[in-house]
Length: 500
Image (cartoon, rainbow, N blue to C red; front, top):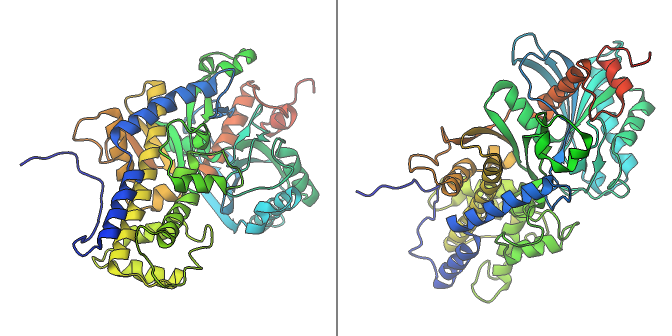
């Protein structure tokens, strides 16, 4: 009996009754969506070079932003902090209490939907809405309380350069946002202005990227964590670098051994289209997006785009001449851009029935399309191909950071809807890591692998609060590098400003 590495779950169903045109179409889709080991290694090697380029003085396509988060937590942090999380779908407000028990915390939170119209509205509307949510939270949980200078960690999950931890300049919108007058500007003053107009008694201690927050929150409970990742609406990674290995901040003359969390913003990887195996559908998504030519990697792997890739393929097959699907049916609902999300693909992959009954119901209810059994088999295989490609390509980024840092073993914390909810994502990702890193046959199953990707702690809530705490902690110790409003920070730390 010959045994080998266990293949990631795949359920092609019965192809015996598949019409030849559909069978050939599935084979063509497999040709363009399957990423073989050799290609994974080629992508990873290029990724390593791009990470290094991003740290250099000249910079590169991957921004590799220093975040001014300059330590991992030791579990001894205490105090009460607010955290704001502004993601692509929801706005969340948390109050985090870091208790006297090492590595323990308590959290209360509220979630608010991010209205779609805000994403293309005005800057004033955006910051006003965020401040309103914060005010509502504070008034509900602290009615009639005198609050002063409660430190806030603001999770701002968009590419931003930070010369200071308490300020940040938005480089570009992602996740479907396209608000004029914000890109290229510091987001903190208008946010502070909206708070001041409402009399909300808090002070921003740290502007935090969700990926950095994920890494820090997870490191609070697992000291082996060295990388944080987000695989959700968008995708990104953060890790801890040494200041001496970041040529673009050499002019600041920091101690070369000081740690500095790097927010990679790796969604921009391969914007030059040198190595990623883009299909015609990826090209269409890019061309029709608010930012053509940007976020190339993200558009191939992030939850925001997986359903759209799937929709474009089905529409192309329906309208093309190489095969016949949905013949004679009204596909107007399928023609609506971004009408299908990653959850739609998840439901298809989770269908437990051999006859794909649930997938048929899904198409009938959501798209008013009645599918034949062979069409359902093609639909199932297409969902598998798109989901698997995303999992395998993201493994290239994780492997690249590990190769860059010469880490053979580490824990990686991961969060985001694709990681937590998409079927088989973890095992497919682990299998790809095994192929890239040439691990022995016993690895690649996800559990106890040399590089193990684990579910993250609450990065955008607890992580943001911890980074606020770490910032105040280093201010108390006299480490003021990367802090613009020293006076406010010293006040929060309970120290008199210098010269006072």
